[in-house]
Length: 312
Image 1 (spheres, rainbow, N blue to C red):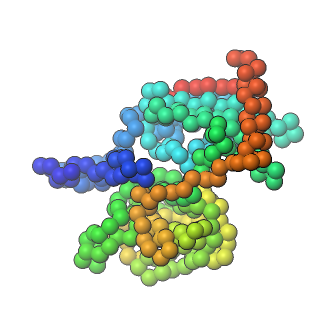
Image 2: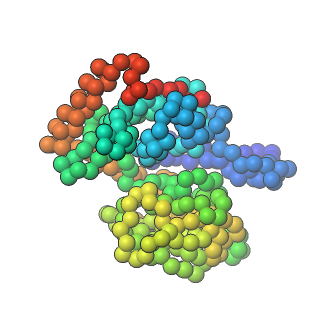
Image 3: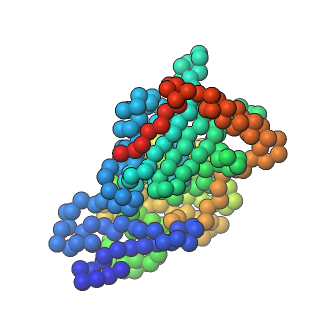
C-alpha cells in the first residue's frame, strides 16, 4: 500500500490463503526517520512472546531446560518473535526422571492469540520421543519457513532492482536481516550437498531434503562445525552464521527453496505437516495419552508437577 509518505504497508498470503502483515523496513515506512528502530508489532504490544515465556517461567520456578523444550515443541507452529498479548498462556504437566532428575514434559499446551495448541508426549517402539496433538498428528512441518531465530524481512520473492548490479532481475528467495554471527538453522531434515564459497552468493550451504526439495542459505559469515557435503542434518540444527559475503549490501541471510530445480517463494509454498500416527502406533499413543490424562486428573492443584501461568 502506497500513500502520501510512500510505502505504508505490505501484506502477503500464507499457505492457507490468509493475508498476513509483513513489516516493511523502517526507513521506507518513514523517510524522515531513516534510523528509526525496526519493530514488528504484529500480535499485540509489549514484550516478545519469547521473552515473556522465559520471564513467566522464572517467576513460577520452571527449570530453564523445560522452557527450552517447550519452545522446541511449539517452534514449528508458533512465531515466538510476535508480541505477547492479554490471554496468552501456557500449561505444562511434567515429571522428573528419578535417576537424572531431568524434567520430562508429558503434556504442554500453549494459547497464543486465542488459538490453543495441546500436545502429548509419545515414545514409540524404537524409543524415539515426539509430541502429538489429541488426534495423533505432529506439530512439526516438513520445512521451517524462517530458518533464523530472529530477523527482519528485507526483501521478498520476485523481480526486484538489484542494488549492486544496477538492473532488475528475479529475486529467487527472501532476505532476513540481522547482526553478523546470528545462528542459521536447517529448515528441515536433510543432507548437505554444498558448503562452500559460491561467487555472488558468498559462503553458501545447500541441503537436500525428501521429495525433490532443496533449501539454500547464502552470504554466510561461516559454517557450523562439521557442516560438509554428505553430512546428515536434523531440522533446527545450527548449520551456519549470518554474514555479508559475496554480492551483498549488508548483513543478511538469503534463503531459497528449490523444488525439482525450480525456485519457489519460501513464505507462500504449501508445506506438508509431519507424520501422523496410525495403526498400532496410534493405539499406543492413545494409551499413553489416557495415562497422562489420568495423572493430571488426580494431581492436586498444589502439586509441583502441574503449573499454569499467564504470559504478561
